[in-house]
Image (cartoon, helix red, strand yellow):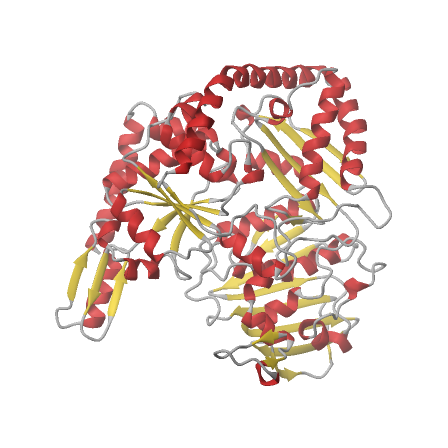
Length: 627
């Protein structure tokens, strides 16, 4: 139901009802989060793919079909599973009628991912082409749609195909403008499915994805052996699986999943794991360690299966369920009972692992006590500075705000858009501040270049005013649980100095808050280098190639402006570059190379290898310009 008001008039004519398709298209953020261009892993085009795959995974978990085939050609996506296939008489209803689906019958889908019957309907409504074919017991049935509107319902026909479902969709370019699929994001999505469903085979454009050891494989992929303080502890039980180790990084790095869904924002199961783990470790060592000393540097994965999970948003990124099933144990007791038995037994049987774990905890304890005095003074300085500090121009909606009871889904969609731009200089921060969305975009202004923090201890975070205030703005001193912004975007000039500032900031995050990068919250803003225009049209260009193409298009010697810095871009223009069409690059880590090795290469002593890499990149840039 939508309310429309024109002026001050409000009567019966102001009220209208929306059908399922109109509501999804009018409020896509409620169903698939961001309608980005594919530059970020949580953009809506990947959610569309995930919604289709979730149905395939549900079939697999119930013992039907061990293989899924995915193809992406250009922007067209096809997904084929070998489950039971949609009942032929319900093919149209299942993908086009809200509150229609088998997942309302808990006997058929006890622990599936999606229980509200919305997933494929959202894909259908937000695709300019959507086609579904069900193969079942020697017959097939196909239906074709355009933006949720049924174009053609084919008659049932004989088929030699194996049972299962084939879905083909093309995301709507009216909703997802200038989008492209990035294989690396899809690869991560598919690996997570395989880690959580050992033995499942997924083929993506011919590439095979399969995991034999579940979450053990996940942690091995996310870390390198020389980073870990002891071999990965891998425990499995009914409806629960965990993998645990510690490394040399700061912070906590916990990957959590519910019914095969990667809950990027955690939830009740992740918090229950954090609390239960602390209790079990205290009981095992018979010592009341600080919780932060036990969890600092932990790298872990926890997966649970619960009946009819309740998520805090349609995109299923945060679990809200407090029990495992109706009338069953609380999430906390369920995980505590499992760890109290299995982790305790493992540590008693593997005393060398227990000893290495104890040494890591005691090291954290020593470092915390050494920092205690410095932290207290730094926190007092930060509180005083914030009273009259102009470094942070905050927004209204933050990632960890409690959603209101009314319009909860829309508020959560805004939380996922919450952004902190980190920029340098008054002119650049002024332009962003004037052109930003004050509901979801905040600005933090640096004063000059940050300190190179490579090789320094964490006390520099508190001793350095810039780092201390940035840490407080993000609220990440004690981990990502309190993170205030879903996206942290480094916005600096497109020159040597800007590149240096970006590198110094990434060093700071990787050195002291690596989980911020590992969980894909850090981005680099792209802004145009050139403005090419004539009296009829203006084109903004992000590199030399785009500039050449713009000159060809406009002809007749158009006016060309080279933006030397962000401060030269007017607020009116800047609003175009940080709005829905914002270009940004996510900062990711190559898991095959340790964080220390990465920082050593780029921020350590100058080496011939680094010089050669710089020279090679210069050659590539020159080739692009010349061609």
